[in-house]
Every structure is written in structure tokens, then in C-alpha cells.
Image (cartoon, rainbow, N blue to C red; front, side, top):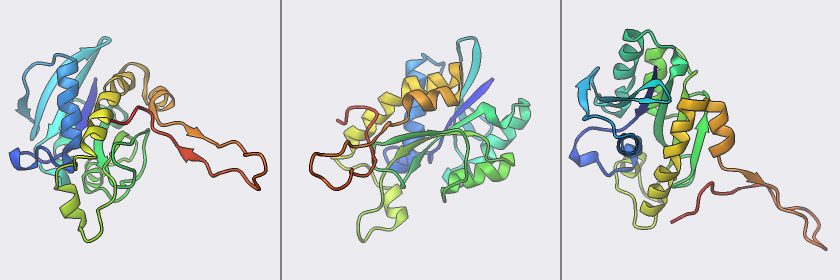
Length: 212
């Protein structure tokens, strides 16, 4: 069994905000996999499907972002699942809007939802699917930023990121997170030296999918 948990805040007021990209991807996965209707369990909206013979729970914690672990910790415990059976999808201010990163494990990076999950499952060893939302504009607080909708410029980038991650998350289920990281994380390219230049340009991260 596997859990794919998309983080966010419940309620219509938060539905289209940056903090809810985890919910957005969970909804898109439910559509892709023709999942049954969502039901409430473990303080979450939950649906389940079978992918390649594996039972997969899609989960949207309803505890609000900062208490996400209160939903996921008891669910892992009830089903006697290992922490590495959990994949968490969340927003990330430390990468540009629409950029994606898959990680096998790691610290919270200051994300309160991830902090809560680590505290309740007792480990950092669960996979992360990070969707970039960029840093707050000048004069904005973090709260203003994460609870605001995407700009007209960034909205198509987020749609592109979610579409790109649908097969990536399925790959995590069927082939494991390391395989998915190798195939779906953005590639790094090192610029070639230009004739007559004194040094090569620095390594650049290139998008893993066409931007909208």
C-alpha cells in the first residue's frame, strides 16, 4: 500500500491559493486514475485506487496545512505502513514558480506542513514532490504570498507543472522514487565555453517541461 498526500487548506476560500497546489495535484491524479468519490476518514478527504496491482490512497488532509501530520501519522499507523510508503506533494517557495523537484527524503526546509508530518511520523524518510511557487514579491509577507491566487503569468506554469507530474507520481508508485527522480527531475546542463571567452557559464537548471 502507498499513500500520496497532497497538502493544502480545506474550504473554498483557499481552493485556488498557492498553498493548495498539493490538493490540486491530488485532484488531478484522482481524475487521471478514475478514482471513486472522495470520502472523509482520518481527518482527511480520501479515495483509493489500484495502480499496477498496488493499492494507493490519495489523501487531502483537512487539518489545515500546519497540522497535516495529525491526519497522516494516524493513517500510517492504522495501516501499519512504513514511512517510505508515503509521498507528500507540497508547495515550495525556494524554487521558481512552476518548477518541480522530487526528493527521496529530507528536512522540512521551513515548511510547516512538512514539519508537522515529520513530528507525527517520527522520520524525515518520506518522498516529497515539490511544486515551486517562488518567493513573495517585495512588500509581501509569506502568509500574504502563500494564501494568494497565482498571477496570470504564473497560473499556466502551475498547470504545466501539474500535468507534468501526473506520470511522475505514477512512476513513484510503480518504479520507486529514485527512478522517478532520475526521469522527472529537471536536468542540469553545463554551458559550453564560447570561443574567446575566459570561462564557462555557471551550471543552469533547465525546465523539465515546456512552460506555458
